[in-house]
Length: 143
Image (cartoon, rainbow, N blue to C red; front, side, top):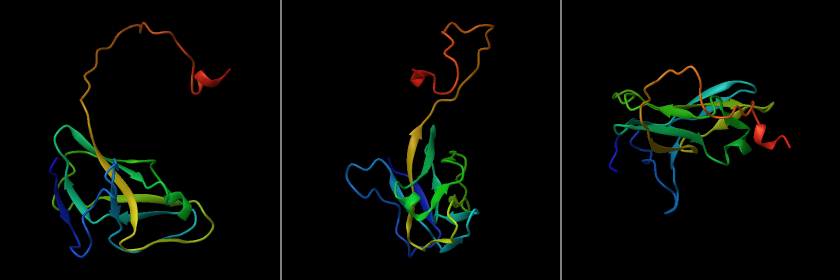
């Protein structure tokens, strides 16, 4: 799948899959960002992307990011296909959960992304659903 992409700083590399089996591509910080303890910092990812029709860009933290003391403030990011303007640079919001400042360095691989296909839902409201009511969160592991 060929994806149209714009880099804001041409000195930084394009996102890339680091191994042949990698499902996601790594994204790098365009600038150094210092995130204070308990605060949320916004890291620019240096790209605007024209996501294909019927797909969204799923943004997630790299698996090692928690070792820095950071976690994505919103859990994950969803880039809609209509977020594709010339100035629509992607950012990730990271929460510093430590008691010390954390720095994300320019060019650091700080997020990962992949494209996910989707179908739009239409709704058919009913009075009753036929499935068995199972309870709430964690009901399959309660015994």
